[in-house]
Length: 309
Image 1 (tube, one colour):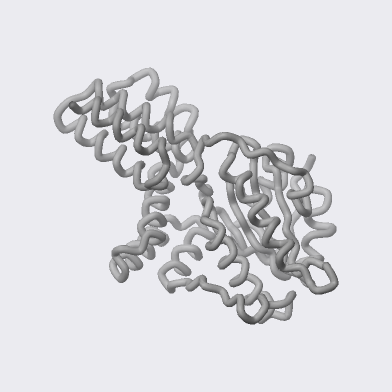
Image 2: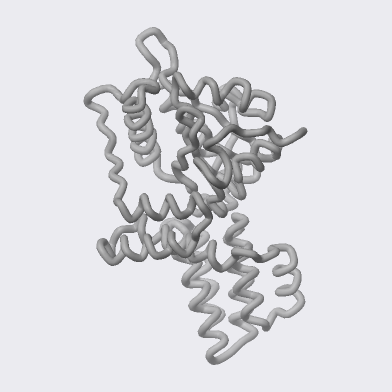
């Protein structure tokens, strides 16, 4: 299956660009979700992406979720987004926006064309232009707010209709967040880091800003690394703290928090002094990328404490 040739607005110089990875940080390696095929909405393929979906985006917003059977977090978003899609039907029962899904495992050419490096990744298509939405597993109310905002922006361009009065968008985009997202679209992780740092300086307690900075710093650390080679080297040199930390970063970027934590906890046990301190601090940095209520985080903290004391 060949990669579809995308019109202007796709790829590195338009729309989505290279986001450098989308992390399922709140639901890594959790039990799989049973999927109803009816929930998948418009299933995007290499055959229909260019011929059907892009032309349709001139009349209605298309909101696409890229998912994988290997990512329970991504799967959990499908019924949520499909439910909002049904909620937004017109009085005649017609959808006011298109909900589409891309299975990156069965449609690798589409995933490549959209520069999908990990899932979940949600994007909107408006008049054949890509707009990145979210790269994690937000709570349903935030997903609703994002959809509302997209529909409002599209309606201003004459595409589709805005949400009903009485359902205002609660999503406020800070200028620093816009700057960070724009930098991520072009793969400029350093600029994105500066933008997030500016946001934190203005609003130190903003969780989205703190999480965004942590994600970008992870992207910077793994940029240019070969995950397979790094992890193989780390496995062969368990006391090499640089390799251990790089390999743990790759584990987490691939969605395996348990592997990342176990790797660094093992290294903590095998090291001492400043090296042990550096590994511990790195693991604590990875902890910030996981939902504070995640039971796996509590387990890892307990294991770390046991290794230290």
